[in-house]
Amino acid sequence: MEIIKNTLLSGALMVAMSTNTVMAGDDWYVSTTLSGVLGSYSDSTFRNDVMSANFLLNADYLENVSFAVGYNGSNVDFKDPIEDIKQTAFAGRFQYHIYSDALGGRLTTQLVYHSVSNDDTTKLTDGVDVIAPKLAFLNFKKDLYLDVGFSKSDYPNNSNLTVKQFAPTFGFAFNDSTDWLNIKAYLIKSSDKDLSQGEDSFSSVDVKWTHWLGSNAILGIDNFSIGVLGGKRIFAVDNDALAVYNLADIQKGAASFGVTWKIRDEYEITTILGLSKFENLTSNVVNAYTQQYLYLSLKKNWE
Amino acid sequence: MIQKLVCFIILFINLMICQSLLAESLWDKYNQEIAKRKQQEIASVIKKQMKVVRSTDEEYGLYKTALSYYLQGDYNESIVTYKKLMDINPLALDVNLAITLPLMVQKRWREVRRYAERVISIAPWNYIAHIRLMMAEEAMRDWQALMSHSKQVAIRYPSQSGVFVYMARAAMWQGDVRAAREAYSQVLVRIPAHIEANRYVNKHAEIKDEKNFLNLKIN
Image (cartoon, rainbow over all chains, first blue to last red; front, side, top):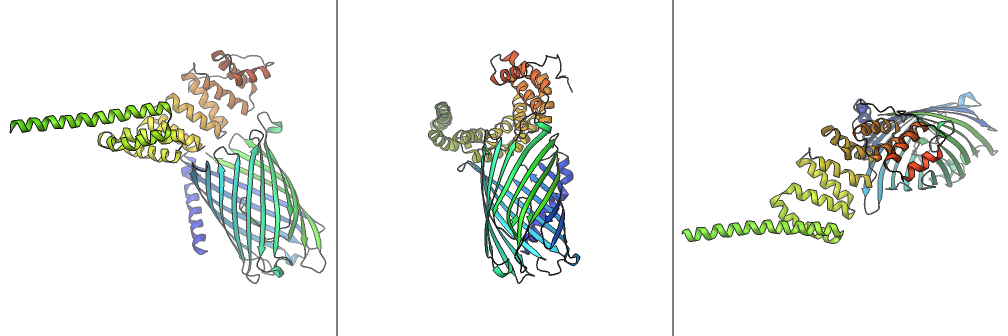
């Protein structure tokens, strides 16, 4: 684990040092994304709201290698102020692309590492480490995508709870590649059901439809997306967003609507409105509640 | 003694002629097979000719090998072989242009851009390099770059309809209907039956022509 951590951090340092070179217009393609989430909870016995800020630096060397580092700072405001949680999370992602003429597409090997720490008074969600390898395939025509992702999350302060996640994805383009449908399954296994709200196995499916508008689109929108999540999941890991959901209760469904604008091929602004259904089974009375959130992000391509 | 020497010289000359004839006949065969597109046979010819070519002209042999790999659909090997050629002669424009073909099939547009720009840095107004660079800019949806680039190329190659097609697409995707219509009109002057240009111009027929709206000028 320590070796992987050091490798990813070295990669991150390399990316940071190479930023000036990239701006000179070499073979490196760098983007930075600043984003934030504002969320509130309805009908929750314990929670009021949540705020989160993220920074992501991504650097690609042509179409061969990609490095990314992410920082996340989150505050969860509880009804009892003593329970408030401040959390910081770092993530590093390394990708290597292999081109296969036999398969007619690009294979991507990916390794992600997450390190999460917080001031949770119970200590249960503090000191989380996640390691997540993935193998992905995108055909040359870029209308078919498959991946098989795995992640192992360690919760050393929660009686050494281990959560394993298997997350295969299938995506395809249609309507002359102006639409994309992405289907991702989350199959999660907890090492101890008593530590994961009474269940040791969770499964859910996340379906997301993205539509790209052509030229002269209304309000200059580049694309919009609609996402729906069905099933149950807890302690999930999202390696596309570089997020670990270590603070969440059992998620029992979600829906979101997002819009992205592109400004002069240089900036991308994305806004997502969403809601998620949760269930907390830790107390004597089952508490089902809803989270509403607004996500905003600004991405800059440094070319 | 003199007789033996003469025999040796004749033998040596014969050997050299045979070697050259062998190479020539293999290249003839290669060209014939290329023309027939018999990929399996091309591979076997290439294998045979490499032995000969190594003793005659390695650079040319590698070039033909890379091209054959490309024609057979072995794009990775084609790219690797073109890169070997670049080590031998980094200034070879035809190699820097040729490597863009397998890269385009694999949709590696950043690399296409890299090699097209390399050609342009040596031969600033090479038409093929500019066309491949514009293809990469279009694929990467870099509309601003494509617009200013196509304007500059259009000044140097005003008879080429393809340049105006890229200019029109860049204008269209930036929401500039007038510029797109004018660029497509320029395409129709050169190719009256151009389907894409006709479709766009007819769809936006209400917009009046404005001369020099594209403002083509030498930078």
